[in-house]
Image (cartoon, rainbow, N blue to C red; front, side):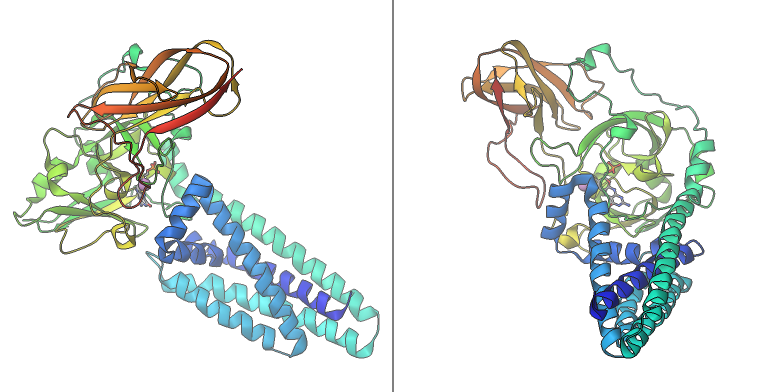
Length: 505
Ligand SMILES: Nc1nc2c(c(=O)[nH]1)N[C@H]1C(S)=C(S)[C@@H](COP(=O)(O)O)O[C@H]1N2
Ligand SMILES: [Mo]
């Protein structure tokens, strides 16, 4: 191989050293200060909505590993370029690294909760990488100028050692960062109090027990996850507090201990994401334990001119929720601490999140929540509103066919068509199914605990061999039937009838 090829390898090794050294340094600061993570979360913040929506649509919950992967590839390409530059001209590659590092530094310091010492990882990583680049390209140059072998050999030895050290540092850094998650350990030790106002028992009739049909209550591990956090916030419950301020008579601040000492209620609520396509799976039903937000707002004394609560997460995310929904005595809007009988999983908002029946998550379900600002819709905008989504986000009535699934062939004969339907806080009145554009047939509805959850439905079907098109539509308790008009998820949720084509054989 010619010197240029080796110089590119030198660059890639130096890039790996940047990653390894900065990951280790980030152990002393915060995971969010690691360069790749900081740049990734910065990109998430500034990405045009269309790009974000496409990422979620294409990769769902796997969008973050894909983003990290893209950044690592870009880093490798840029580093190879730095190697070439350095070979052409002494210091040129190092200058490229420093310029990129300055950009990364901007990404780091604009993260929510950033501290000055968060510059440490990028500085240390760049210094280590630049040192390795100079060393390796220096060896190459000597070999080239002298046309001798030994220098090339010492290049290979140095590159291998640096590369191996970088790999070990990346693996160790990631592993130690995971182990250092105090939130995981504290959560494992936490015992939540029993609810003063327990949930209604789930009737056996709520689960039809059909293979492939979403269970009435979604297990925590299967619950969809959507958020902008590249690394899950690691919140110390002992340090956590929630501040209620803004258009209030008196500011209220509540600690985790105080929250747990309040009379808690437990309710089943089905959470849904506005990015859920028709037929999509960004929806789940869980049993939430928490304290009514309405009672906290009462303590603070809301001023009459207010009409919105801007909830803020420790990670900088915000949601704007209509005040009247949060104050509604007939609606259990919760400051939740428990999910399906456990403390909130860290990725679902530990220690505290919001859950509001009937509203999409982006306007209501703030995870790792630390602040409620009582304000006005005409005074402030929330995270997704700034990115082209509607300020208000009531969940649209929807229905989904889970069985039979699109994949594979359905055996001919007596089958069940089954799925779920939801109109949170309004309730599902009726679900209808039609086959091959024929007459609508009413499906049987399973049981449910309240209008705040989805409901399973089923319809027996005599399946004849051939291709068939199945469609579903739901009618809510206001009498409104889902529109057939297809609308994408932007700006306030998808519409249309879920349609599944199956082959019966
Ligand atoms: N801090 C924070 N909270 C957040 C979000 C976020 O990006 N950051 N996303 C919201 C959105 S869009 C949805 S749909 C729900 C999803 O909650 P889950 O991940 O527990 O299912 O969380 C909401 N809360
Ligand atoms: Mo969402």
